Image 1 (cartoon, rainbow, N blue to C red):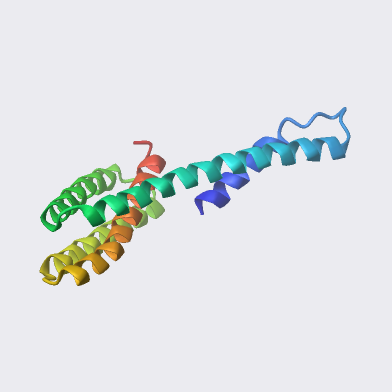
Image 2: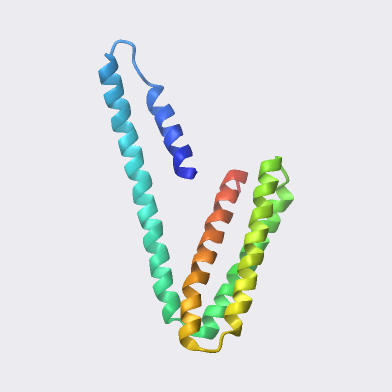
Amino acid sequence: MKKNLLAFFVFSFCVLPLRSEDSLNDQLRRAAEKLRNEISKVKEQGEVKGREWFKKAKDHLSTSREEYLKNAGDALARWKADIDVLKDQGGRDYFKTRVSALEQHHAFATKELETLTGITEEAQFRARQKSFDKTLWTLEAAVEQAQEEAGL
């Protein structure tokens, strides 16, 4: 959704500076070039974020079990505090719905952490850890998006 919204704004931004003395083909060509440049910037940003997550995943797999569980618990506590701040913001109904979804996502991640803590076999722990990492990263991204929307 964020990409679609960004593409819409980029296209709208590209169409604004059209000059009446240029031909329609020239105007469309310039708008397409600007749109292509903006899309490539967004793609590069996505690739950078993906590389960061991949590096984090590799680091997590080499981290000791106790340290990983402690770091995950600390991250969940930080995001809970961020969600509480967002909850205090109030705002429109759709934003309250988003915050409610963040609370549900956090509750799911907390339950998943409890399950992960109870696993005794190392191979099974590492397999579940990969899934849990995805849960954490999507929660992190969702919290960041809501904070951006709230202007925090």
